[in-house]
Length: 480
Ligand SMILES: [Zn+2]
Image 1 (cartoon, rainbow, N blue to C red):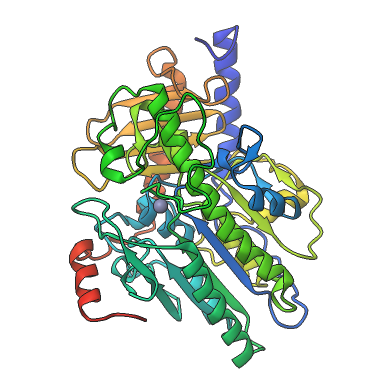
Image 2 (cartoon, rainbow, N blue to C red; image 1 turned 180 degrees about the vertical axis):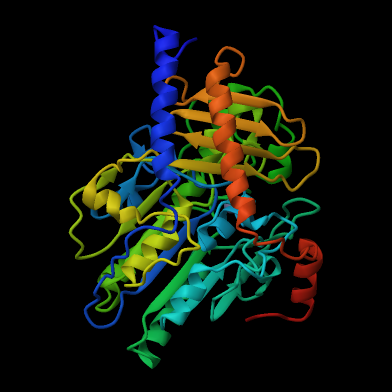
């Protein structure tokens, strides 16, 4: 396949265009004009809700005539929807580190085993210094103080080690084996939020709520279970070991349909719980004016590129996520934004909402500028990584530059090049037939990685093994 009918002309134009636009975008980090928001009285409360492993296409997905996410889809009508949002990795700890620091993963070096370096500044630190109460609630064992992801929070509730919030399930031998129901975590966060607003009414609140659902195991309770069962699908138990046996193998379409139905039901459960929280916020005299951001930390694969779950590739199905921002009272002419964005943009957006100039360490851009002013003049480039927890899978790094995407296997050095516009499913590797584009993208990727190294953040400490840490905390009767 070719990108243009006249390949030479097309290539020349594309390379010139990319070079010019990238030269502009390379100048912008840390040098944006400062624009102070003038809050009326107390800065706004901010609530971030993460639905772990939620694919971008679930938001408007219908099975039969039934929506998978009816509550969030309805709520989205009062929010700005970013239709082309990506996570900066396919895994929880790496993506959350990037979300908190507004830095790509290669800059901080965080992975499943390595914590945030001491030199990295987090959104919660910035907000706390500005007078916010900062509380986090995590149902995922990888959003944890063990990896330094509690930095800046007055309190990070690690719910999976709290017997009052978690329950034991049989997942797999090396998994911690506890899940936290979304309703319980939301109830705890809501109770704390009301208490804080009552005891310190003048203090703005920042709440980070990381739900485990719809992360596997896909085992939704009634009334969600069997909601999306249909003819032609094979029932799937939904447990991680049962699903993992099929990972990397040819998949029977009926089995895959059954698996997706279980996931959809799991999503429906997360949607119902999140909808309850959103309704409570909207009905409360104080919190109806809160800024609310709903997102996911990465996508989820259902056989695309031979994979299931996440953690293993940087193909789009593991990166594309929903991202919605609701700011009551804001004048935002565009309710839907198609310009590409990623999770690095969330922290600067929250800073602006809070009336704080984003610190120069943050790489992202204010998302709401896109809703106010339309597409940016310059082309933006994004890094994404895979840092699999198991060594049998290689690490990957990817650069997205406009319609081009370069993927590099960091173990073998092998590179693949895709045209996301002509080939959104990333099936046709152009690296052999488009050497000029490959060279261009390689230069951009190496430049971005050099820029990450140039920050000199250093490496964070090696984290204790997850299972040992959870067992230790639970044996101590850790509750808060
Ligand atoms: Zn996750």
